[in-house]
Length: 507
Image (tube, rainbow, N blue to C red; front, side, top):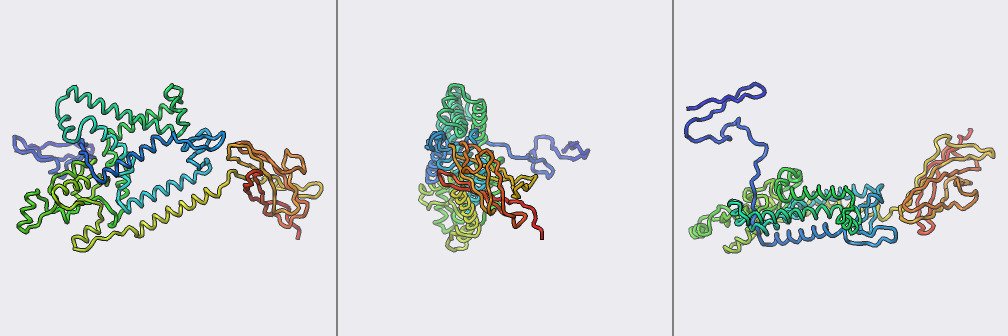
């Protein structure tokens, strides 16, 4: 017997859904085409098993290197001379500077950061074209901190099987103590992460002392609290959900890869058909096909996102290579060749099935293009860095009047010159003019006929009123004029161009 239940929708349309009565089997929600599907799958807790091998050692090395740099780089010192900060890497908002060892970037040089963003994007694209999501598996901050949080979790709660048994059992004093210790250490790491971040924006030793004594700016405590909360939440609780639902890169990289890119791949041409060790041996003795995969599921157990790599390429896979280590360990135990799972390309998979030898094609159009863009942008940035000046000069011509005819018959133009001294020390400059014959230059505020030397204070800009007079009749109504500024100590020079205005000549 079947009853009809009417589902009244907002659009007043009725839809009938069969609901069986009695104790018979209940149909699954997906059995009807009109069944509503959830927006995303409910999260299932993942218990990754620890594993040992080549890629696990690589990940440990990358984790130690990246976290070591992040946490301790603010304490590295770099001598830049008197009155300059001695922190090697510093984002100095009050001083309007970014320091990176011997490089000093000023606010008007924001184009260097634009170049760095372009290079970072191209490096990411190149990594993807060569080895898939290698960034996600080894270098992404979410992966690095999640790995660290996994290690802390195993320390307190044991490996996969032990952890699962504890979670399935009753709450005991020991379980509470283990959970409390784990979360406490997670919070310490998260707090240290937030604290390290703010150290890049002030002198690290001084800010550490101020934070400890309660004299640090309120904004520093606010940023530490925010980053503590986000690190604790993302690395401790959300984990693979960040990669699956929040990060756009898995969806973008699929459009940037090709059949030659190396990805973590289950070599089904060798692994299928699956069977236990004994069954595989029996099939081989009988001359029947038998794959190397024994369906042990170790590749699934070690995966930090909980997927089965044997199902092919999946959005959740971060290409970390831990399944390769797990499978290699099993293959070694049963006496079969390693790399049943390995970094491989789709082309080589198809070639092995066809009985052809594998090929590696790292150099191809897209990798060359990415490398050329990286080299070009890097070269432009390097040239700009090596040829830039430690001071800037700009000149603005008077708008009204554009020229003045003096009583002695000369033509005078007025200009406003601005000199920006980017160094943290006062500097003296000599000003000269070329392009206008028989020009007489007067800097307002200096005695007439005196040397045209001006001084600009440390990390300051200064404006000067400059009058240029021409005692010869200008051949053109507008003549190019060049203002030269020379640092009297370093002999560094810069120039600015404008025009000298005069009345039009009568024909």
